Image 1 (cartoon, rainbow, N blue to C red):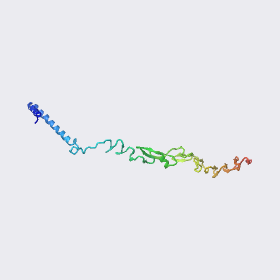
Image 2: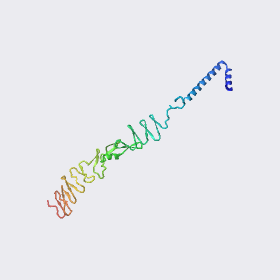
Image 3: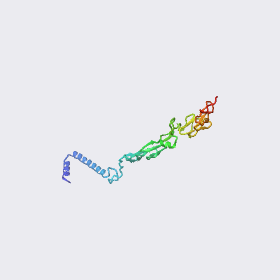
Image 4: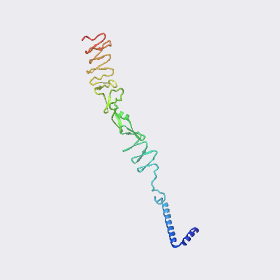
Length: 236
């Protein structure tokens, strides 16, 4: 026993009985606390396998928690309890890789779904559909069809000629003629409803093609006759 401990013990013995008992109780309590602290330090903070290595301790997440996963806060997002690349898109059914198509006209780019109308044009060359919620649906009613010079307009997702007219596909882009009139090839003139198509210099004269050799063909009023400066209309 060292001198300091001996002196402390001697002083405690010189204290009257009641005080000596109190000091003994206090020393006993301190001894118990020191024993618990030693046991705590020896078994890894009360956790682990008793060897002080803490193998059973929960691994610390350096990013952020996503369900039971730990996501890298710089490169990953949390999607339905799983970590996905930030460039992927999170959908209710799972993750969509960047550049992948969603439904008909949605596309994943840098973590977001963008609408791609070009995809609808591929499905509908008339151009009368629009991309809505990643689906191609009828749209642009009353707007001219995208074909150059078109006389047709979008209606219910279809490209149609205006009411009371017919579209002539062989009459050049955008050629619409009154309903019932014959569609003629480019460079000719529809004449009446009998299917006549007049080629210049011929003209349409009351449903009949007429042409004079001098190129000055004119139509006699009220008659299916042609006249020129050399051959005027006959008298009524």
